[in-house]
Image 1 (tube, rainbow, N blue to C red):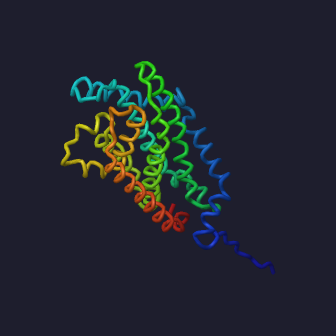
Image 2 (spheres, helix red, strand yellow; image 1 turned 135 degrees about the horizontal axis):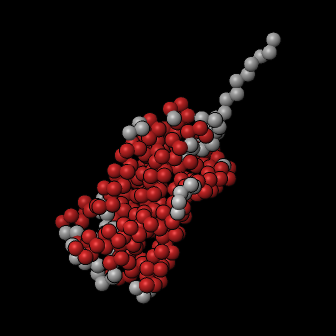
Image 3 (cartoon, helix red, strand yellow; image 1 turned 180 degrees about the vertical axis):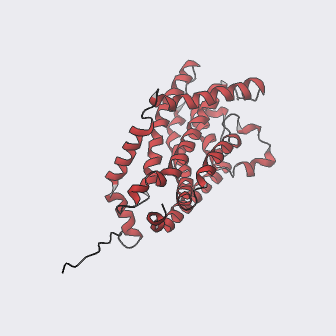
Length: 275
């Protein structure tokens, strides 16, 4: 009589082994990221040009509405340059958050078949948005050349603010990715938050127009510090950074990231059963 055996696949015990597994499965991370890059604009008429059209269209709308009609100040910088410098981190944040939040649902079949650290899936989704960010940087360089605007050496600090944007999008994305598995309503919440956040973040306007009494509440939006940091690094002293607000944004980003990782790890063992 043949004896049936049950094979159980499970991760190594303990947090240390989990983080070691992340390194062991690095090739899977690269594969998922590369796959998402290839299929993102598959069977689209203009392909990767969508990553250029969206921020450019938003820039034009904001320039007309806030620059021409509302006549908001641009601190001596051409309005399209000011807006596009803010669109860089915002578009990266919005794309990363949306991709990260839906990543577990999009890879449901993979989650139920084999063990690997589930953190790889949303991390790969965020990495894809770096491609769009690189393309957007090239477009900004062209816009600045058109207006003959040359940045100074502080632009070398740009990766620091990009890291803040990445941490904010990844941290929030982990929260929504885990919640999206259990409560599918959250797939409708993310687009609303992204749209709402666009108008309360200094993308189409400068932070200088915000009254002093509202500054503390204003900087509770972590993307305010990120966007102001980008403008300061790219456009110079015309957009000075309020360092206390930037520190508050940085602390909030760290709290969001830490909370997202902890919540994701707590819910991770249930993903295969619920997804």
